[in-house]
Image 1: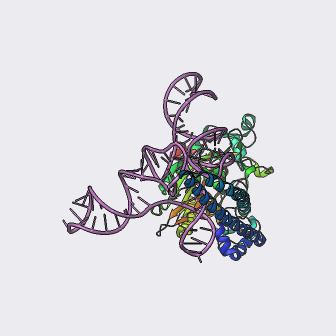
Image 2 (image 1 turned 60 degrees about the horizontal axis):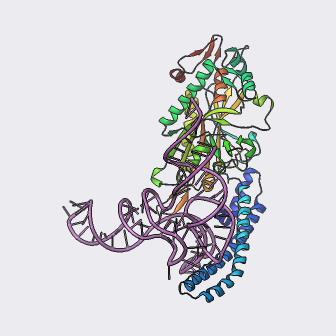
Image 3 (image 1 turned 180 degrees about the vertical axis):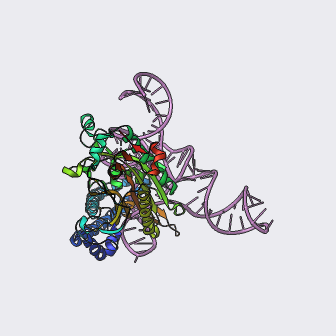
Length: 424
RNA sequence: GGAGAAUUGGCAGAGUGGUCGAAUGCGGUAGUCUUGAAAACUAUUGUACCGUAAGGUACCGGGGGUUCGAAUCCCUCAUUCUCCGCCA
């Protein structure tokens, strides 16, 4: 959520910047400012009335203390009118405040200046690439066939027990999955992230805190009985750890990492996009979250990008790094880099990581602040990234490393898997 | 799941209808004293919003209510503790 003060002061710049998202928010911002103006007006009136009635209440108290019953009762009568206007002002203040809030929720984050304009993923900028795309022979199989042939993943069993998109990982498949989780967590820890195992289910306030609510309500599984949401990403609990917190400036950078399963309803997805491991309702991911001083967040984003690139290189997958264009940029992000790995048998680039700087967009909702050198509260910059999402890594590993004799495990993972080849 | 008790400022802990944004202690900050430190003493020390400012408003777990007036009374939700039940 954008800060209202920022809209008051920089309406033109915000309007201009949001054009990279192909949005013209000028009218929306004008109406927000109009509501804001009305709200402030009503708030001042309410405060004045409250002041008056506080004053009279105190006087009545004194009159009673002095035993002047009649005068006190006379004063009481005077308050009748005040009470009524106080009540109606209170109502309009809270109505206006929630109108303002609702309107603010509809404005996405202001893109960073580096974000290219554009409509679709076609317009994303490739800023880096690496690794070698393997030449697979004619008999090369997509990962869902390999998973079946080697008994690594059972999709049908998942359908029986739960539903589509909830696969079982079996034997060496399960061990490879666990190896990847441990490898990613160890790497993150070595890079200075504190390891956390968060709850996998969160309350409504947390959903709002990181911005999944209200925009993506339908994308989360909701346990109605207790009004809990299954997390779509570890970002939610890992960032909400810091909701309503005032951190110390000296503590920057604050870095946490966690492995969690992620649950997504993926309403509206279909066809070959959801084939095999490409898109699941439950998948594993290691997430990194960083809190930074506003002056350092740009550099922090770069560091996180090179960190993610580093681990992709270690497991030897061909990748490309994209800077998302305005049209593809998530609602809450000011800037995002996506990493895609090449899954050779599918002949497809698969997104395995998304690293973003949210600047103050999340911290404003979260009330996550720090005290600056003048002891004033300022909003913290929040960043996060996948490091990494497992299923598509698994898909690319299986496809790219298939040989006639089995599937080769990258060397860095062997200490974690305990085997260097997946065999029948 | 049932019964009971509790939830107050960074922490501990008073306060049961009126000069309470809240005693007191600890902690923090600044100063005095000291070669320096400790101790002692003095002062100061919550957050947010409105306002150029003066100042004002709100907040005593969350929400709602009673009242001229609520930390204090009522309802409701959450959390913690104790006992019972169940359980990996």
